[in-house]
Amino acid sequence: MSAETTPPGAAGEGSAGGRRPDPTLPPAVRRAAVWSAAVILFLAVAGFLVFAFVQLRAATVPLVLALLATALLQPVMPWLVARGLGRAMAAGLTCAVLVIAVFAVLAVLTNSLVHSAPQIADSLRHAGDQVASWLGPLGEKIRYALSQSAGSGSSLVSTLANGVISGLGFATEVITGGVLALALVFFFLRDGHRSGDLVHSVLPPARAGTVIDCGEKAFAAMAGFMRGTTLIALIDATFITIGLLLLGVPGAPGLGALVFMGAFIPFIGAFLSGTVAVLVALADGGLSTALWTLGVVLAVQMIEGNVLQPVIQSRTVELHPATIMIAVVAGSGVAGILGALLAVPVSAAGLGVISVLRDRASAAASEGAGG
Image (cartoon, rainbow, N blue to C red; front, side, top):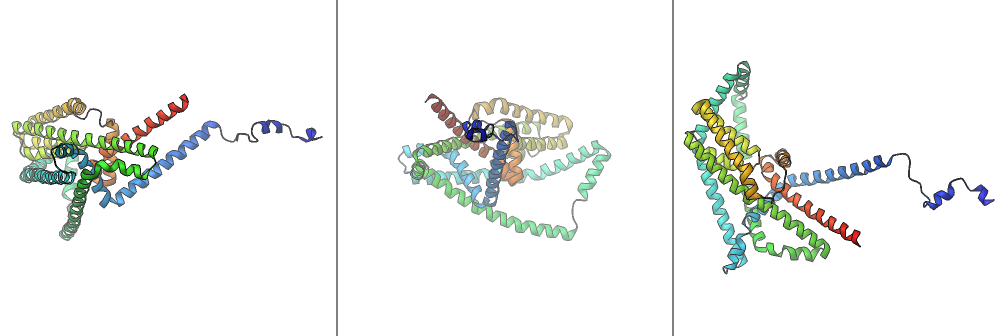
């Protein structure tokens, strides 16, 4: 009797665990839904982290700058300690040298830009007039729009007043951030060798090893970027300045300073500084000088891309050029020039962390398959 009252297929359901896959959605759609949810969750977390970074920039920006400076100066510490200095004394001496070097570089760059700025500004204005004359009616419209962009006297005074107030606030923020970053550099240099012990004291052994490997990989990526980019920027600025001096382009030292600073923003910085140099050459020496200047800039950039980048940075920063461009544009959109400067080293550090996690996951999967 019980066999007669049993619904057809009930035995098959029981043998399958009492559940049957929902036929409403195909398996491919369900997998796509799961992946979509994972991607949305990842983007939400990443967006929250970026938002928190920007909102807490008074602390996060000095922290990142301190990490970059520490990555650049870390090799000095073993050399000083090996000569009998304590870690505190070695870190203090390194920070003092860093302050002197930064002020010296800023003084040289500022002096070059201040003395060259009037020549560069006049040349850019003449170059703009020439380009506008070549464009015909469109150039006249652009020139008229630019001439009308200046406000009236009252609005100009208001703009200047607001600029002074915001400038004072920005200067205060820069000084505070600089002091905090310098203090962090000192502590990172002095106590950086204890970071592994700190991680082991907080996390279980297996997790601690993963965190330490991720930190070392990220730190190595930032160190490679800082050392390589600084050396490449110095080489680019030196050779382009020599070329501009030989061509008689006015404001060559200031243009070289722009090239040096622009080299820390991949692709965009080199393009903008090179464009300024070509426009100055166009205004001062005509089309032939501008073409020679363009040749010098392109030659230096080709040597950088094909020789200096592979030899100096090697594979320390494993980022595709397209990834670098996207990171720079995204960083500039989030935090302006500072975001563009920090985008590539932060992306390189993130890629280093991902590579460590991927290798550990692959090793765990291999061990599980072997077991």
